[in-house]
Length: 475
Image 1: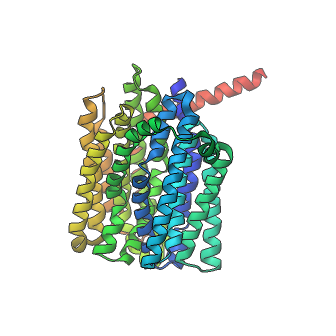
Image 2: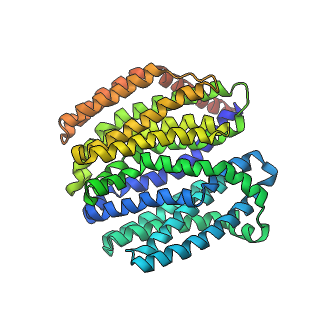
Image 3: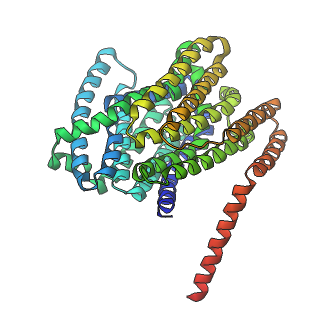
């Protein structure tokens, strides 16, 4: 019971924080499609994807090690943080000097802004993981909401009022990250500890030994999730990358809940590893995750077609057919990531790297080949194939290490439902009444498929409300 309460509590905090970030990506889709050219947005998305690759590689994903070691070594938290903070400061100084020299030599467009944005992304990752390591999940949520609020405000002022276009995207993203870092630093004092706490080289070596394979794994994840931007830009065109980047942002809606579950579960898996009932707990959470995710995808598809009809403008509207594949890709990537927590709990990050790399090669290689032939659809389909492969290959590997139970029939059945809904929605893509009909039929099917779990949830809510009423009467 204590484990469930802790997991739910962490999920609530992460939901509040993640919701603001995902809302931000979704909220400004109409604004971007009106005020930002497809080529400019394509360039911004390409830079973001390269930043997503560079940051974990250059810093060896040291924040992953911070979370794991802080949970395991409760008495050494401050030593861990002072050591990694010092290490990050040294790397940041070196990288900044090198990048500025490169920018000046090659006269890179928006070079300084790109550097600031990249450092902001690194800082967000490091301070966020440090907050989680110190059990400051409430602070984590507050800082994320503040980040979103600042970014939203600046987006509106700089894009709509001042009409700064591409520069506005870089500035708003960077300032939002810096505000978030400032809020976390005010409470965590990571920079001060870096100066006063010093550097423990032996501890740093152990942390990097754990986190370095995860940074290489980030390269594999990048091949699956972000390399599409590079492939599309080179093989089809930067403007097509702008269309794809808007479609891919709809995947953020679906991952709102699933990313929260994965974040909370990763911490929980570290804490319960070795317990007798841990395998059963793992299986129950995964069963719920697959039910909710795939059912949610089937319902989101017709809703997304309605949204595109009403709020997506210009050439961006051509990306509506990509969104169902984007949703499914995000779903199976989430499932694979959840299974990966089983390897992380056993400190087998090498298994995660190997399986992710294979999937990344399939995704990127396939996309590169089919992009000129099948266009954007070919790229997103090969990306989906890569995610499904990663999910499938991790199942037997994890099965050797624990009592893994997956209802494959349910996963396959709900996936077929999603594909069916995709074809039904695409049949009359821009008819709102048609999409509402598809949604209602899908809602009925998903209710029938999940009626037992819905009934159990309603029953539990009812019991809780009754318990609160009794407590109120006693008072």
